[in-house]
Every structure is written in structure tokens, then in C-alpha cells.
Amino acid sequence: MTDFNEIKDSLVSLDDQRLLHLVNDALGKKIPASDILNKGLIAGIDIVGEKMENEDMFIPEVLMAAQIMAKGVEILKPLLGDDETSARGRVVIGTVKGDLHDIGKNLVAMMMESAGLAVHNLGVDIAPEEFVAQIKEKNANILCLSALLTTTMPMMKQTIDAVVESGLRDQVKIMIGGAPVTQVFADDIGADAFASDAGSAAKAAKILAN
Ligand code: B1M
Image (cartoon, rainbow, N blue to C red):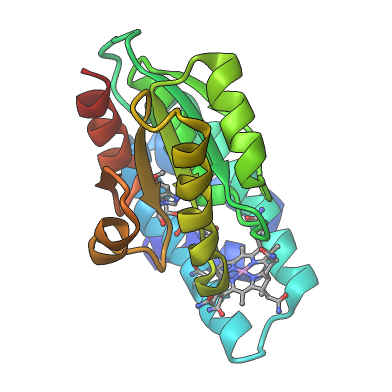
């Protein structure tokens, strides 16, 4: 078995000690942190997602898998991202109202921080009016919205509408993302940018900030 298959397997079997050992072991073998993340942890949580869909795993187990994955990400965190700096971007990021998924959004926030942007991560289940208040308070020039559910995607449009109504639309560029989100949807709802993964989100944010 490759290291990646073992990492995937330990996540799916909810064996946190084994997963942490394997992640550290892979780092010791000089396997790039981004490969451990993408081919191990993210590939593993995708299997968890399939099992959830087929009712082979249930919410408490999926939640445990998410928590174990977060511990693995914590180890990789200092080794991901680039170290170019640009203080121009002030980002407010959150998962939209009704949606509790935060692993991907946290990865996006982390990559943006590594890229030198000032990131205010509001968390999950954030209402449009809270995003608006935080743009004002943090004087943000980039708003990042994440959604993992098809049922919460319309909340991205509602959030953009709230920003327009508040008169702040000219002050912020808006980027959206999350597994069900597409470029077509981003264009439809009037977002300025879409990114499919954390690395490209950080790159796009640096461009938006300039
Ligand atoms: Co949920 N869930 N979940 N879940 N869950 C999915 C999303 C699902 C696809 C599983 C499935 O059925 N196969 C499905 C959605 C179906 C749909 O809408 N089409 C689903 C469902 C149905 C649900 C519930 C409704 C289940 C229920 O209660 N019956 C429920 C909803 C709760 C709610 O939000 N109100 C629910 C709950 C949960 C848990 C709480 C148990 C847990 C979340 C824990 C947490 O996040 N702290 C959970 C999990 C873990 C998942 C899966 C298994 C994994 C998600 C994940 O973390 N992926 C997921 C299946 C899957 O995606 N394979 C699933 C890893 C992460 C790194 O990827 O989040 O896609 P991702 O982020 C990527 C990109 O999308 C992108 O960059 C990231 C890194 O590269 N990205 C952005 C993300 N945000 C971005 C923003 C950007 C740019 C890029 O710019 C701003």
C-alpha cells in the first residue's frame, strides 16, 4: 500500500492516531505537504462523502472524520502555501447562512494567509447582514463566500444582494467557491471570481487585491 492509501484508509476508519502517525511519517519521507493533503486527506474525505451518500457512514461518523482531517491539516499547515507577501488584500471569509461545512473554507483562508493577505475568518452559518457588517468593520476589499450544499448556494446570491443594498459593492471584490459552485453560477449571481480549490483561490485573491 502507498502512504496515500494508508492515509485515506485511516481517515475512513476513523483511526486518528494512525492517521497522525502516517502524516508525520510521510513528511519524514519528504513527501510534499500538498500531496499529503490532496492525495491523502482530501481523497480520504471524498470517500467518506461517498459512504455518506450511500448511507454506509452517518453524520456522527462523518463529523469525526472531519475532526480527524482537521488535525492532519493542522500538522501540514506551516508547510502549505507560499511565502510571498502582499498586505494589500483584506479578506472577509465565511460559509454562508445555513451551511456548516468549514474544512475547505478554512483551507482557503489558510492559503490566503500564507499568501500574505489579512484574513478575517468569520466561521460558518454567516448571515448576509453579518458579512456586510464585517466588511465595514474590517474595511475589507475582498469578500469570500463558501458553500458546500446545493441548497445553500442561493444564499450566496442573497449575500451579494445584501452587499449591493448596503452600498459597499464598489468597495469589495467578491469570490465564491465550494464543491457544487461553478464559474457559470458565479457569473449568474454577479460574483467577481470563482476558484475551484484553495491554491487557486489564494492566487485569485492576490490578483483581486491589486
Ligand atoms: Co456534508 N455534505 N452534510 N457534512 N459533507 C457533503 C457536502 C455532501 C456532498 C455529501 C454527500 O452526500 N456525498 C452532501 C451535499 C449534497 C449536495 O448538496 N449536493 C452533504 C450533505 C447532504 C450534508 C447534510 C445535509 C447531511 C444531513 O444532515 N443529512 C448536512 C448539512 C449540514 C449543514 O451544513 N447545514 C451535512 C453535514 C456534514 C458534517 C457536519 C457532518 C460534516 C462537515 C464538518 C465540517 O466541515 N466541519 C460534513 C462533511 C465532512 C461532508 C463531506 C464528506 C466532506 C466536505 C469536505 O470537508 N471536503 C462532503 C462530501 C465531499 O465533499 N466529498 C459533504 C474536503 C474539503 C477540503 O473540500 O469543502 O470542497 P471542499 O473545499 C475545497 C473546494 O470546494 C474549494 O477549496 C477547498 C480546498 O481545495 N473551496 C473554495 C471551498 N470553499 C471555497 C471558497 C472559495 C474558493 C474555493 O472562494 C471563496
